[in-house]
Amino acid sequence: MGRKVARTPATGPDVKARGLDTETLGRSIGQCLSVKGFCVIDPEVDDEYLDSVLGDISAVDEQGRFASVPAQVVEGLLGKEGSYRVADIGVSTEDAYASLFTESFMRDGAALRYFDAEFTRYANLLS
Image 1 (cartoon, helix red, strand yellow):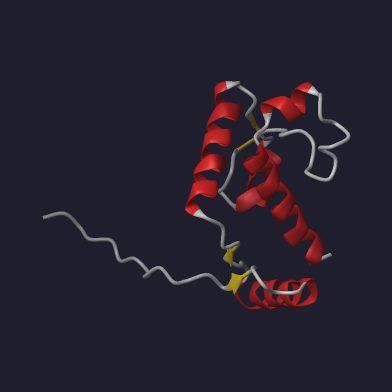
Image 2 (spheres, rainbow, N blue to C red):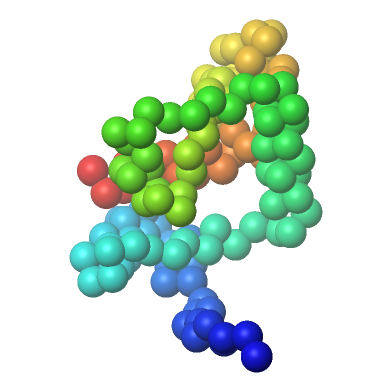
């Protein structure tokens, strides 16, 4: 008989981003990080949009644009189980208008750029 592995039941997000002002969102994320060491943020977006992000990621992967990161920084990205490959996805949504006709803009999907901008925004709330 195989050994069963105990799992912690999944819990909901620590913070729901939609509807929170910037100050409250930043404070909520900071409190969670100080207590738990991590924070699960629910950006509360439609499943259709999430599917678009997965499609964008697949396209970037098919283009061979993911690269391994140096061993010295793997732990700092998302721990040993986290990302070990990264890709430059081009311009941010704020710069997209100015870079409308660049190759980078054309090959990166809007959904992926949106989530990149959101993660950057969350990080900036903590600085």
